[in-house]
Amino acid sequence: MADDTTTVATLKEAMRQFVAERDWERFHSPKNLCMGLAVEAAELMEHYLWVENEPSRRLTDDPAERGAVADEMADVACYLLALSNTLGIDLSEAVVAKLAKNAVKYPAERYRGKYRLEEDDAGASTGEGG
Amino acid sequence: MADDTTTVATLKEAMRQFVAERDWERFHSPKNLCMGLAVEAAELMEHYLWVENEPSRRLTDDPAERGAVADEMADVACYLLALSNTLGIDLSEAVVAKLAKNAVKYPAERYRGKYRLEEDDAGASTGEGG
Amino acid sequence: MADDTTTVATLKEAMRQFVAERDWERFHSPKNLCMGLAVEAAELMEHYLWVENEPSRRLTDDPAERGAVADEMADVACYLLALSNTLGIDLSEAVVAKLAKNAVKYPAERYRGKYRLEEDDAGASTGEGG
Amino acid sequence: MADDTTTVATLKEAMRQFVAERDWERFHSPKNLCMGLAVEAAELMEHYLWVENEPSRRLTDDPAERGAVADEMADVACYLLALSNTLGIDLSEAVVAKLAKNAVKYPAERYRGKYRLEEDDAGASTGEGG
Image 1 (cartoon, one colour):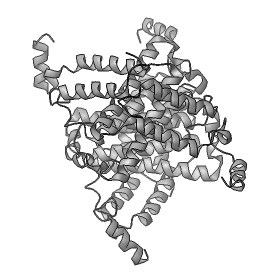
Image 2 (image 1 turned 90 degrees about the horizontal axis):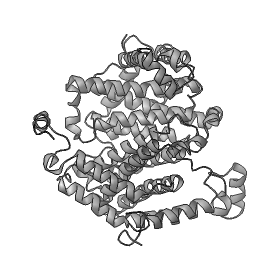
Image 3 (image 1 turned 90 degrees about the vertical axis):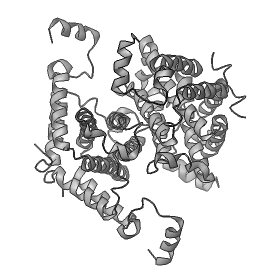
Image 4 (image 1 turned 180 degrees about the horizontal axis):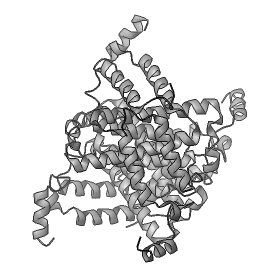
């Protein structure tokens, strides 16, 4: 199984089944699932706590770290899949809609190589009639 | 586009392209992406902050809340997709491996309806040679 | 030592000394300290993940849980103290200013027993010239 | 009011009063307060998201950023104070106990300038009978 051939629905169904087999739907309120997601996101982040940005790109060259990081990413993904199951929200639609929204918010030509505009750019943008 | 027909690779590719068009790979160190993921997880969680568990299931009956929650979930997903792009980690493989690991850690028959074992159960489990 | 007689400056100084003895100022950039703070906040939250709101008030009746929760709260506090050392920010002033700001944002008489106003209240507030 | 002369108990009392005036104790379960703390920690962290470690030290040279960061730090502090009120936990004691514990875990002479030991150091430590 791999990202090239696995649909999001297949992963959601695997998660749904895992939860159903344990009768855990009662614990899977959105409030709890969001908390779990935030906890796992923090555990993932902890791997990168004292590392500088550039060296952080090479942390997972070490196979043990790579396995541990993949494991934490899976935990985050599982909570996100469980939440989309509980709420009946289509993740693919949500992602595509968000990228479309962000494409308008961050026009490629103006944000190229910048994560935010300098004041000069911002001033210019007003004049451009954006 | 919907979860039934969308592969994880398709979403990763959409994210990769969004980043490439803005030349943002330079900002997308794993350290930064994990921070961003944790920030978005917290924004999602904020929607459920003062709500009780059971009512939290109905928060998204309100269409505006539903849209906002889907939007935050997409933000979390986008950072996770970006991170898997940066690290070259296969998310589907990681999720399937994690569910298999958790199936061993939480045997369905013993964890049914429980998120953790009581001491009695734990004692029994020792006796079982589990 | 106890909250009644300990100033915030005393705790900040204890933290500063701990860091200086290890020559750790180099790691204590605001970026890293904020990440550490968020990691510890998540570890604290994990204790309450599957617990309902009301029972969460009694979790620390158990002495082992009480010790563990106090320990996580201390971790959060240490990062906050370290950050205020690094940035030269006065925590007491910041807290007092924030409470004053929130007293205006959430007038006691209108928010009594409510964490947010219903639409009716909000409508009324407009009429009041609030 | 400033850190030099303000006891932790004074801040806790200010927070307790703010909550009591609004009859908000009902919302201040430990579960909710931990969530709120994690949300505020993430908002603080967001200020440092795309900034490199070294430049992050200078972000608050800008007065507006300094005010915003102090404000987020106060939010984190308020939730921590509220939690220690709800649980009856003495923060100063917890911090002092934690620093004592960490002084043993991270002996100053061996961790000087390092956030973790290299394998060589770790090996040596075994030989030392540490």
